Length: 173
Image (tube, rainbow, N blue to C red; front, side):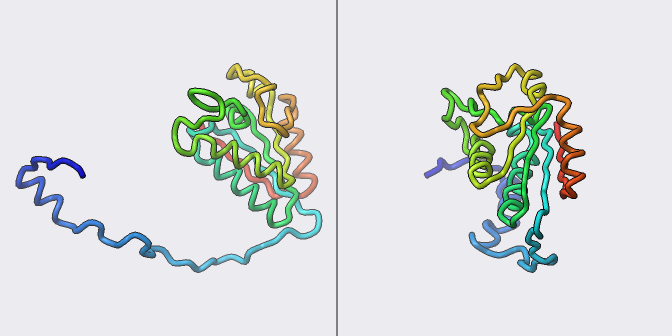
């Protein structure tokens, strides 16, 4: 039980103006209508994601991996390419005080989702130059991640564009 806090009359009045919680847990405050069809991949379709966002500093990195996983499950050939600071997302050595231990809830969300993505047939590429910019070692990559040359970033985009891929490019610092 929390200790009683001395509040001024104005603080108490402010706190009581709106009852809390205004809705009980589990209340729906958003509609559930899906506007677009639930598209599935047609034969040979590809989904390619580029990630240039730092793990845990960029929620778009995690969301991009979730989207790539969803595309994979819809039947798309799906690949994610991490470059620049995004390369840090591919490290298996994340953790504190030792690798694999989460210092905060969700520290390993990206690691775990990448492992799932790879296990389900997705390809993960990681730029070696992006790793080198931050002193990260190639041997510290999550198992199954494919290291790439810095010049591969542009050629990967060309490769997947020529395949007709849907390209999702995320960029965050």
